[in-house]
Length: 590
Ligand SMILES: Nc1ncnc2c1ncn2[C@@H]1O[C@H](COP(=O)(O)OP(=O)(O)OP(=O)(O)O)[C@@H](O)[C@H]1O
Image 1: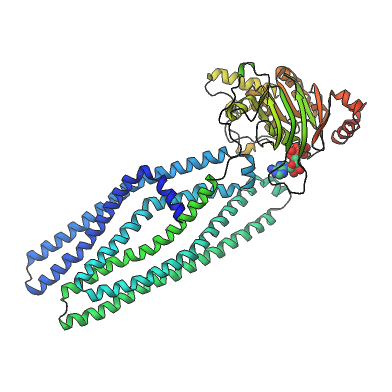
Image 2: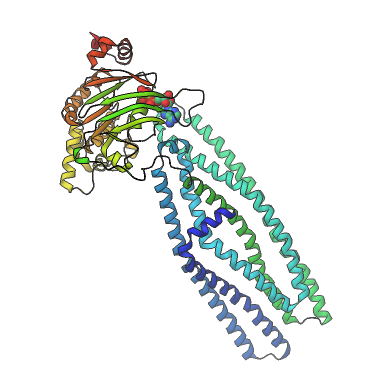
């Protein structure tokens, strides 16, 4: 708890002066509030001895004035605290988002999106509430209780001591409550994260769920999580209710005892009625902050949990970063020549007894060449391509573009040199223009950008965009749902082409196209790819036909490289794979 709060204390360093101001006005408001019973004591005593209308008016006026001052001071507390705390909340959220954008794909595979969502939303909001309200109120409530007890002791030391004695069980109970409640809070936050992930996955996969009639099963899984959350919330509420019960019962019992003893003392002449009235007015005022302290303890626990969850993500080490002294990239003369030397790779979460996915891959793609990568399904073709822009990092060997190791390049430079069209096309809920120009320098003049977009769309045979309601500015629905699979694939292909990379990485970019469309796209791609070095994963012979040479990936290595015809002649494995993967394999071989 201490460590997380200490880090928060450092984070809020710039806003501390304003929080101090907030604290000062809150304590001032409490003191002003506590002065009202003193005026009451004076009023009661003067009514007892020499009652005059003027005294009543003056005392009443002072009480109203004190009430107004208290209200203004509480208003000022919000003014001082709200602005800086919401700014800190914004900064923490932006840092979190920057962090998750920076983190490698392996990190996102490990963390559910729901977990990241709940940490960046609920947890950060909880932290803001603590900064704006909890921190200030803890100090001011504690101060109010102390000052209040001091003032009560001026009325009667005996009664104040009884009040003080009741504070001890309150502290013990609060401590036990804090311990139990923090465990339940953490569990609730985790369950909330899991539920968010389930909803998100169902929404994304809604078509699959419907097509396979699995909505009921999805609902049943969701219900199991929802029931766990409900049970946990009930346990939280029961714990809180028990705690609240004691927090209410203890002060009320104390007030009852004090009233009895106070009346006996007044009767015995040990204190006057004014002092008794003042004691009770103060005690009533102090009971609130005493209970508030208990509640704030609970909030402190929740905030600590939220901080730990926030820092857990922020502290996860990012393994894929730019080198300290990166090698410069000559973009004007970049050719995209790719060399892989003795490349080894295994996923960090691969079972220990499995061999590396790649065990010494050697490959050379010449400048301007188009090389197709072929292999049986699931043998690592997509992964090999993703090693180039460092979506995953190799565990051994070397990958170089134009003679410079990708590990020596700045990540931004590396990703400017390369462009990727993924097998599962992700389009954002932006316009077609924004999707296609994602990798294009936004500083270019608008008309140049527009020309680039159309050129790329034509190259990818995505001329259908011109016929859309708003052309390039047509907004693509969430996840690109309003387009067909083939249309989405062609826009994603256009996006890769538009960034005019030195090295184009295409992961089976034509898989969703019918043969006729594929033929057209290939014809246009041939022209575009003429001078661009291209590494393309191919499952169909028609895609292979696009390539100058073909490399066969098998058993963690490149086992053969040559033209399509050469490999058909020399490699039985290649013949087998092409035959098993392409519908027209026999035609290809003949
Ligand atoms: N993030 C990951 N963590 C662990 N294993 C993974 C991960 N991604 C892929 N794999 C595994 O690595 C292997 C290679 O996957 P990859 O997607 O590269 O194959 P592929 O040859 O492109 O497949 P396909 O031809 O079906 O597209 C598969 O066994 C896959 O299950």
